[in-house]
Length: 347
Image (cartoon, one colour):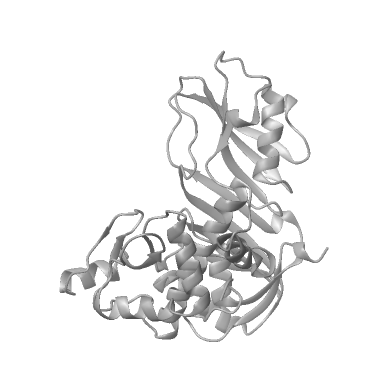
């Protein structure tokens, strides 16, 4: 089980089939910054809108524009290529001389704002992402689709790692197994494959909990994660106070991000995690991650999109808007609706 396609759905059978990304404008992502610029320092923060380009390609353009090495350009997160996205970059300019933004403008890149800051932009330094997705060729009963969207907004959904983590046809997991078996990889490939292996194991545990109808409820021995944080606590006996916090999305059940050390869960939660990760492939992935020195961590099993709305632009065209925390995937939302073909892959 390596990507999102074969995973179970928390709300039952698919209610639609559709197509996305017929044009980059149909998949829009706006990064939500985690902080305000200080107004001083030697790092120039740039809010950039890009179209049809990878985050890394734009970083290269910024380096050439500023006359600095590519290592002098940083960004908080990667954004889709086949999309229109806005995100923040920082460029290290010790002499505080910034070229004109107009010199950078092209069909694919536009600088929306700039400000000085006293630190380099760090990976993960974002508050989340806001999405606008337009689905075309929608087939399905409109009332059922409307109800499914409302259910997701009210109850949340399983916090799957999206198929982007696993490469086309899930090939990153097979490559990770080959790497653990001795195949040499570049450092950047190694990091990507370690993440894919961890993500595949997490999705296995989450799939088991979805199949059992317990992805958003408490099991005995649960480890809890605070909403909007990486902080965890437990296990501890279930109480009215914990149930109330779970109901208002202040805390979430969590699953393992594999590494060295014992699982923190106990009781029924521990038994489920161990059973979900007991086969030969999972055992090989676990051993490889431990050998690589990663430590046991946790990830929330549940997420709730913020400000989720939908509108029918035409009889067969559906617009979805919502915001997600860092590290969460819009494809997880689409998965709960049904089967959505990505037109950008047709070429």
